Amino acid sequence: MNGRAFLIVILFVCLSCRNSSNKPSEFVFPEADSVPLTEAEKLSPEAIADISKNISSPVEIANLLQTLEIPFSQNYIAASIDANKQSTNFDKALKLGILGADLGYLNMYEKTGSSLDVLSSIRKLADDIKVGQFFDFESIKRLSQNKSNLDSLLFISIDSYTKIDNYLRENERGQLSALMIIGVWIEGQYLATQVVNQFPDKRLSDRIGEQSIILGDLLLLITPYCNRDSEFKSLCEDLRIIKDKYRDVKISYTQGEPVSVEKNGALVITQTETSNVEMSKEQLDGIIEATKIIRNRLILNN
Amino acid sequence: MKKKYIVTLSFLLMTGLMSFAQTSEPFVSNCVLNAGPDAKYLKDFRVQLGQSTARSELRYKANMSLWKNTKYRFSMCNAQDSKGKLIMSIKDETNKTILSSFDKNSGKIYPYVDFVCNKSGIYQLYYDFYDGQQGSGVGVVSMVK
Image 1: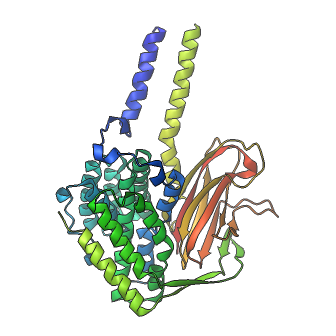
Image 2: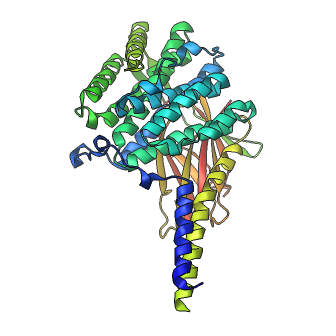
């Protein structure tokens, strides 16, 4: 084989390998998706990445619910979302986030039957905004049916969303990434507020109150897009309404030094410093109501 | 002959890079599964660093919100070609060090650290390879009962 032929073989092998996994170069994004922001509107990529990691995972909320022995309820799932009826990329990305949170809740409670319906909707929405290649549908479906492998299921589900988020941000489609993240947060917040309404618990109401820590970041994430169109404007307004409900919620701190203990060769650190949420019943009720109204409006089909 | 050498070298380099990309995923998922049967995966941080030229703070930094009444497990796994072991530390918003997987007094490096969080907030997670060495690894964050 001469050098040129060998090079062609190498190129063929390389391209085949690329095509067997992710195929970002093949996609043609809708023009409206790829309008670059002005420099002044941009947050640094590191800041955006940090914000996306700061959002409370719906898996953590579901874990808290399980710790509190709260029974699973299908009523908290956004079952009414019809993936075929989402007309804009705004709707598709936001609902991809909402259903991602629902998937986390279903996975934690091992509700495999329901999760398959949610999975199908997620696949349709992800395909529609050209990120379906990052969503490992078959593996998630397989693991959903095999209840013994919860950790793999959580890993592949969360990892799929992380890849979608990274890809959108790296390809000048940050507004869709922001919508997805906000969708995840709103649905997690809806789940927590609906449960606390039915099963009042201090730990859960504290977790809701503590969301004030990241609400500012969420607004920071969406603010560059608030004047993009009426859909973004309305979502920004919704988030400001929720933030306003948190205005008088206070978080105080007590000081303390972490305590380290070695147990069976492993290190266990217990934090003695504490955070304490000061939130009245009226404040909590205001947050529950605002979240419910906004979330229920957002899951309406067009 | 020279051409053939260059082409062969290119081939080896490219296939090496491709195999790294294709094998990093099982490496991460193995690390996730090794976090323990009682651990539920939350996030991972994939760290790849070269040899540090100066002794400084841990080089890889990420923020993460940690929530009160939750026990987190921070596990670390090293790729086979790493020269150093992955270590980590966590600082709070006031820049106070909350934990470190490396005990300066004994020199012991813990492969995982459990952290009982009692203060909700945004924390800074730092990762590096011991003594600023070159390496690839993953830090997995899970919840434990």
